[in-house]
Amino acid sequence: MFPAMIDICTALCSLATQNSGYPMLARTHGQPASPTTVGKEMANFAARLSDIGKSFSEVKILGKFAGAVGNYNADVVAYPEVDWPKVAEEFVRSLGLQLNPYVTQIEPHDYISKLFNLFTQFNNVLTDFDRDMWSYISLGYFKQIPKAGEVGSSTMPHKINPIDFENSDGNLCLANSVLSGISMKLPISRMQRDLTDSTVLRNLGMGLGHSLLAYKATIRGISKVQVGGTKLVLCLVTDDIVVP
Image (cartoon, rainbow, N blue to C red):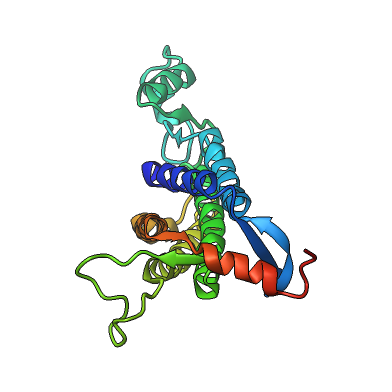
């Protein structure tokens, strides 16, 4: 997951740097507004996604080492001389995790919700980017580079559809439906434990899998676009809203 997320940020930084000198007519509410630059708009997304990415390192991955309802009852009875909280701390840390001492029969899954909320946030920003690129391509701000041996449309081979950004958009929608549902459900477990988390946990991979498909599609989409310089200039010089 993280290598693909880094690849997206890297691709956006390159897109911003390479096109920093291209002026572009911005649009608010879909209507012509004031001039901006292609590089600045791409840099906005690179910064937003990078900022979310940094937050992942702040989430502690937790583990549990305690009895059937989160205590050391049986352990103390069997070996009363052992410092069980210390043993638990050392053992869980040896696995590369941090001990959560405040548990029931299960580790409460709060950290998974935090992680999935971050993935959902990253995906929301990426959806914003995908849809902006779709619009920019439609306006002619960007052109898509044809690939040898491929047609751009199943019924009209003379055109090139923005299929990678659309594919990413669809996968992100499905991913966030799963991730947000899991994030809301996992922290809730009746009293010291019920089994509702069991079936939910089996679907962690679905939300992450659709996210990864989306990330790869966005990277493909970025690799196929180039600035439509002529159209950018025409929009600026022909629109009455722009003051020369």
